[in-house]
Image 1 (cartoon, rainbow, N blue to C red):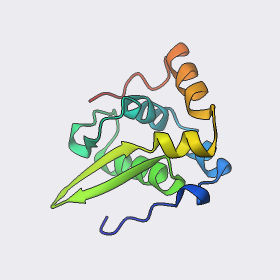
Image 2: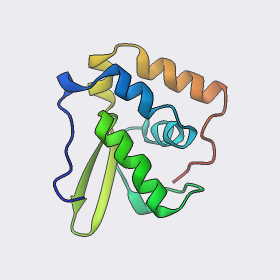
Image 3: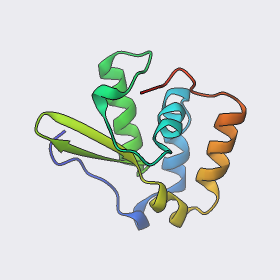
Length: 110
């Protein structure tokens, strides 16, 4: 995961964001990270293998939904809420409202 690539805000594509958000686990991760806290990958509780979690986090990062940083051997992730709100006003809030209303991704925790 050394030197992970993150798209610049202007390069975040709506189609990539929507594709990244097409999975309930990834929606649960976004909902969890919506509180603005950065979390270590080891803190994330999901009902999938670590390799699958790594894949989900890569999809979110590559789409510009999250930002990942490495500190030694640990990786941390945070939601790029301000970038998403600036690029697609209203999208993140509507998404989070729907995730809450429909109990999507409730198996994801910290």
